[in-house]
Amino acid sequence: MAKFVETKDFTPTKIKAELKNWTTETIIAALAEILGAENVGMVRTGTSTSQKNEIGAVIGTVEVNGAGAEVPVAVTINVAAKPYTDAPATAKRHYDAFDFAAARHAYNDYVADKKAKDVEKVQAKAAKIAKDEAKRKETAEG
Image 1 (cartoon, one colour):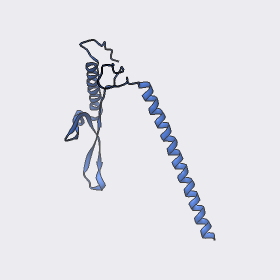
Image 2 (cartoon, helix red, strand yellow):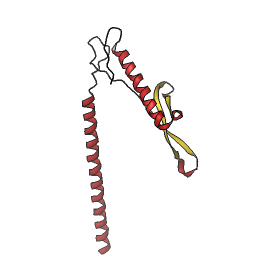
Image 3 (cartoon, helix red, strand yellow):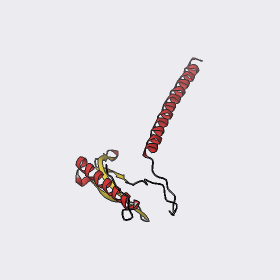
Image 4 (cartoon, rainbow, N blue to C red):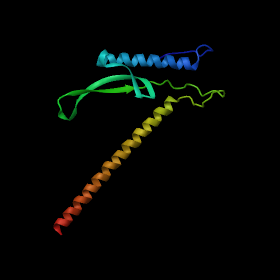
């Protein structure tokens, strides 16, 4: 894990840029080892007026509608270094320090809620099917 000391010359912006660069290089190296260097690299994404640099990786191929030709499937990863302190009072924009533990907890809550909703949907669908079958059976007997 990296350790930095913030100074007048080594500002939060420079620290975050260094962290982002290290992370980007590490992800590219790891993916290149798995997928091959020819399938991983920096790419430009977005619209003509809003371009950004992201990590791109070809992770597989798809045969589209049985046409016989396979096309590559790619993903992009946008690395963003999060603020580690609250914005100072003199900052033009307010931002809060990123709380990894809270964000991770929020994600776990989201996944648990989603799973519960998915279970409810499956149960509701099963109940509807049972009700429809009972109604059909009743109509057929009647």
